[in-house]
Length: 458
Ligand SMILES: Cc1ncc(COP(=O)(O)O)c(C=O)c1O
Image 1 (cartoon, rainbow, N blue to C red):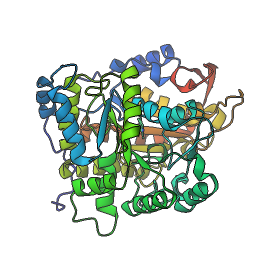
Image 2 (cartoon, helix red, strand yellow; image 1 turned 30 degrees about the horizontal axis):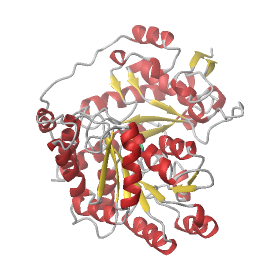
Image 3 (spheres, rainbow, N blue to C red; image 1 turned 90 degrees about the vertical axis):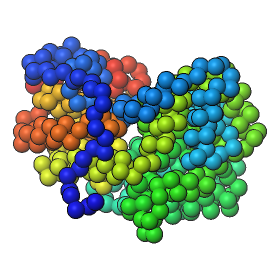
């Protein structure tokens, strides 16, 4: 198997989706109309769309076939039972509660367990998770290991929880902590995995302090692949066995099926606690729907059930993780500094290091993201001062890092697409000193990265 080095996609193409080649002049015009904000660009004008890996993957022949089996009965649909059984095959929690996507599961869970005075620890809260915790008045605390905050530090499990910090929090404020959460993989920390040993250690601390442990498990299969390939003693186990062991350590989970559910929409909330499940189902009925469909159509439930069977396939996961690293290795070789090691679903380019002549308040991440689009029609996402620089009191300060995330949709682009991205980035690196910063000409009060308009600085 490992004799051949070429990464091949473990599938062949069955239905094609055209992508439109545009000229640099057309893209320049599109940028001007969009106010140099890539969220405002018409997706038809994007050649390689690496904005997110969420809900953007390609479904398989068998998922499309399963969609035809979708049963739209309001209550007790056979599609619900197929979904529930597929989830429980990997995550044998007592209660499975379908939702339309991950944040809907978060909204319900944190409405029940959160509230003023509460504090919720996580390795790193994803932005919707933090927002849903804080919306209830609770405090969201990030307790990732110190290596997880250092872009250039190599560590096999940079998503691990700082166990001593968790113990400290539970000793000092135990009464205020309703649940402990671990995000696998740690998206906000660069898609970095959490080890099985670390999850066992978190479980032990939770047991000692009598706290339930919940997983934010969006990329559980990618995390399991990292455990299999990086953690001593795990190489001979199947991904499914590893996933089930991870599940056995937790009391519940939230999930966005738009990632490792291999679906375009969907999610769920699961737990073992009967009283908690009842409170969550009551909220579900208010906001999502009846408990046998949540916010989903029967056909979506079928697509997720089939996706869960496919995502633990080891040929798929080997290809997935290797192709992300292939992109990262080539970018590093081209002289583009990146967050290391590469995570499962994305490569993060360090724009501040590549463009030291652009100060953070002139948005080096934005400059790099815009140039990737202008030069090659590639859409990434600025994760830096544009996204995090404006504070609620109106002040502006540089974010901790200025990154551009290239997120890889699942099973969507081929190796030649990735080679094209590498070629564009390599060319850009040779003329990085010519790139200029931006100024913001219009921005909303919050979440400005979605709608702000920019002008290039000359
Ligand atoms: C770690 C993590 N948690 C939660 C979510 C929210 O999921 P959704 O986008 O389905 O609402 C995401 C989505 O990107 C995520 O990466």
